[in-house]
Image: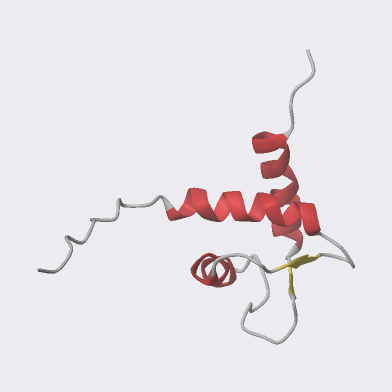
Length: 85
């Protein structure tokens, strides 16, 4: 008897893309490059949206567009920075 396959919940890929873009802010270096150690499906979606360079390459980083750099900072601050009172 085969084990019952668990049904995967529907994911909000736009929110996942935003979270990955926010985390890329942590590794920004060298004029807009970030390490690309994230899920391939996510980096491919970011590439198709025009936010990063093609992740399918031998380099260990991707280039973030000017828009992506600004958005990654905004998302990082929104998601991870503790507001002082």
